[in-house]
Length: 348
Image 1 (tube, rainbow, N blue to C red):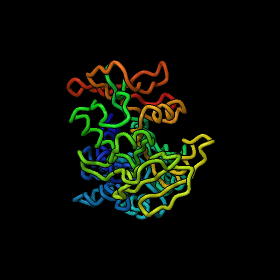
Image 2 (tube, one colour; image 1 turned 90 degrees about the horizontal axis):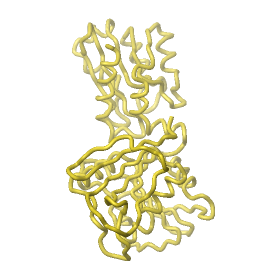
Image 3 (spheres, rainbow, N blue to C red; image 1 turned 120 degrees about the vertical axis):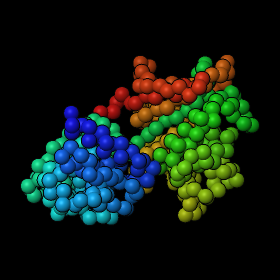
Image 4 (cartoon, rainbow, N blue to C red; image 1 turned 90 degrees about the vertical axis):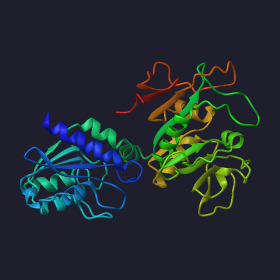
């Protein structure tokens, strides 16, 4: 189908903005004249021009816009934010037809851009590759509809389902390969925040930054109920914004904030509320088995990546258990390492 062909191109373009558009959604746009692409664009960086604007600017023969179709993966905005409304620009350029992948879930848009285009006499088609377009902006949708970050759980385990040996100090068992370690850092760059528990922070002293990939380091999030973690840990070096959830009073700095919560109540919902207020749309959980299992037991996750290493530990700390009967959605092989992926069955 010709419309799906061009919408797939919109999705391809949009994915280029993965690490730079948040808190805005990723969006791609294509302009077609006589079955020929004459303009392309995507939302490159938050606060800068949207996909539709970049696509229109790329057209070398602007007189053709009056006879073209604009394909865009997400409903054009109709409100003034950091940039003017894209719907107004489309109307100004007299583009007669617009094909939209999915409607914007953001309350300030939510169908208003579509109505504005229709009222101006533009022919509008909505819902082409809608599922794929919604998947593209799943983090944006989760944040605005569930009022929490999109949550990714990640761990590496041995072939016999252990994530580490039982230890009190020293280096953890290395289960990742150089290739899969690089992919871990890539995933960090794609998230707004990364979380560990106090046990992992104490034993591993992780930096939780992006070293083996290009991109901005995510905000660090750590649980430290009793403020028992040493201030000399890498987590507290203040090179990266860090949120510490505790029940104690402590003096915060601009890049190291202590946030009090009630540990007698359910902890994760309180943390999710704070992260939502902080406008954190995506959270990567790399914590130990207890923290990961708490997210699974609370059914508070959207996707899980499990790296299976070709190593047998025979004993140690057991890997988290996903709900019985939940099948892996897909898997990838990286040499003898296997990366399993599962999407939450509770997601619509």
